[in-house]
Amino acid sequence: MNKEDVCILIPTLNEGKTIGGIVSEFRSMGFSNILVIDGHSKDDTVKIAEKEGAKVILQSGKGKGQAVTQAFQAINTRYVVMIDGDGTYLPEEVYTLLEPVTSGQVDHVIGTRIGNYQKGAFTRVNLFGNWILNKIFGFAYGVWLEDILSGYRAFTHDAIKQIELNRTGFEVETEITVECVKKNLKTTEVPIKYLSRVSGAATKLKPIRDGFRIFSTIFLLARMHNPLFYFGVMGGVLTLSGLAIGIYVVNEWFKRIDHIPLTILATLLIVTGIQVFILMVVSDLMVSMHRENMHLMSKILKEKEKK
Ligand SMILES: Nc1nc2c(ncn2[C@@H]2O[C@H](COP(=O)(O)OP(=O)(O)OP(=O)(O)O)[C@@H](O)[C@H]2O)c(=O)[nH]1
Ligand SMILES: [Mg+2]
Image 1 (cartoon, rainbow, N blue to C red):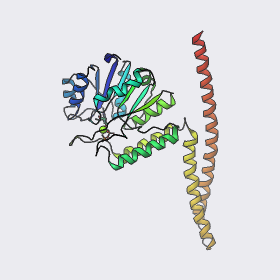
Image 2 (cartoon, rainbow, N blue to C red):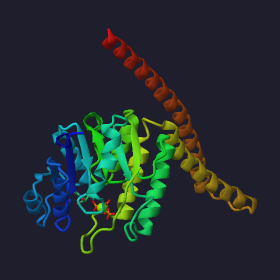
Image 3 (spheres, rainbow, N blue to C red):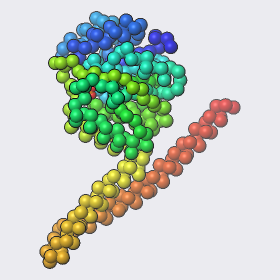
Image 4 (cartoon, protein in one colour):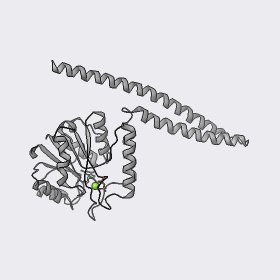
């Protein structure tokens, strides 16, 4: 691998304490193409990054997701490594991430933090949230990964040009992973070390708000990929809540107490739930047929290319 072919992409927002060290470490390893995409930091992040020899661009919108989207459009090297600017990932592990893409095995590598993290790097809430979101992702997309939210990744040029991103915030890692599954880009995970933030450097992640956003991203993006999951969860929630209210209503009715509005509500919930289940079967059929058509189309195109 030629180091000129690698762009090191670092999204930053007020990371003045750590960005200098990261850029200089990559430079001392021989990586000269370092792109910092900054979210209009109020501290001296931009100045330090430039001084250490990185190219800095300011993002046009808000959020890590928008920054990464903009950077992906601007990058034209053969390989890309994305790393957070908060000093929680080790630049020296870049070769571990690059190996599977440069050897042509995969299009996308995730550095998995779960097996080797410094004490205090994850709060209990983050660790639990991470675990549950990875499991939900597995159910939704049928791909079981350990750390879909990791900020240390490597990509091929082909991958960053195929990945289409629409989310603006911390849902970006999820959306990247979903896009890779949908576009049949091969993904693998390699274990990496995860450090805690240096003291005084504030996180921008709000666990509950961002956790919920990440969950809704996994859920909403599954509609076209796995309608069984998407409509199944929705139908399940509706029907089960209808049944719960229904059981209560019937129980009360045996005691000669009537709950007319609740009876109507229970009926409506159950009927809507069943309709969503029907929609689920129909959507699944449509997605399967579409997939077969696309498969056939790409086969025809490949044969045409051969001729
Ligand atoms: N350009 C840009 N970068 C951002 C923005 N928000 C966060 N970042 C950067 O994205 C990286 C990840 O953000 P963090 O706040 O560390 O989020 P996290 O790693 O999920 O959470 P922690 O566990 O607290 O580290 C850091 O380098 C941030 O500086 C933004 O709005 N714009
Ligand atoms: Mg971080």
